[in-house]
Length: 402
View (cartoon, rainbow, N blue to C red):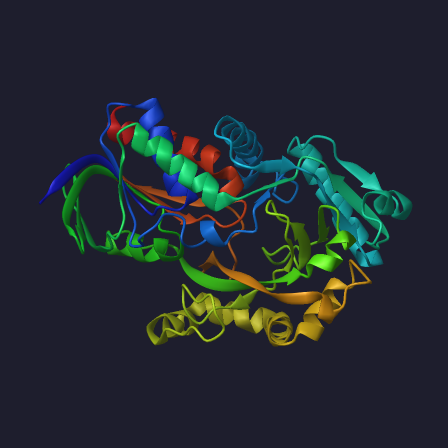
């Protein structure tokens, strides 16, 4: 059977579902479908998320991340409150443990103020220990607007609202080919053909493949980085009240190993950031020869590897040694020991990489005819999803005449 829609969204992660929900709210007459190759929504980045509601301190003022994070967080909290999804605005501290990190901490403070993040406060060592008695550092930044939630439950909430408004969630639909025509787009799936007036590609780890499949050569390539977590044993959770982060390395889009209290009461430590040998490589043993060769043959990856091979080796060493992992954590929390940790989960970050070896640090959306391709949507995309959806709706309006 050949079904025709006004809009087809590929990818039932949090950005795709937020966009679908917003579309059916703003244009209730549209026929909208969300496709996903999995049997359940939120199976990949969304379902392997740390659950942090980000505040907006890290992002360059004026960037798409900065513009969407605060708005997205506010909308997210309202949605959770309305739909009885557990969340908590608990705050976090970003801790400088070395003298050379102090200027970077000041820069985070400046960025946060420029982005309108409320309540920011620089802390002395004594003030830090009033909030986190077991943490150590020279200085810290208190970010009271940071929160925690369960993003898989949030995405399921978006899906329910979308379906209640008449939207169709088509799971087990893997896109095999995309053929743009004059006034519509034909999608071949493993369940048959679909057509749409407009396409929104929220394919996450395969967003670049989908763009290329539709005839739009992406200017970047997705490189998967696995983030591995440990859980702190229940009897040692008292060491952390809320969230404790290091000052991140500005050269890399990763925030460094940190402590995160989860909405279910668990305490996670991590993640590291190691190259995954497959786009959905959640385990160290997961390997896809075709995808691995695609990574190492990409000129941008080879340039990145030459630049950061020492950092990469350090991350790999931490991946295989709990003692090394605990050593990194002790910079923030001196009392933590390897015996306090037990293996946790892992997620894979869909990080876009340019041909020059640059890790793209902002969201990237490309419009081509009646298609929108979300080519880079790593953290804080879960926090920002509803605001990203607003941006996508604005971009899609001319394609749909809405």
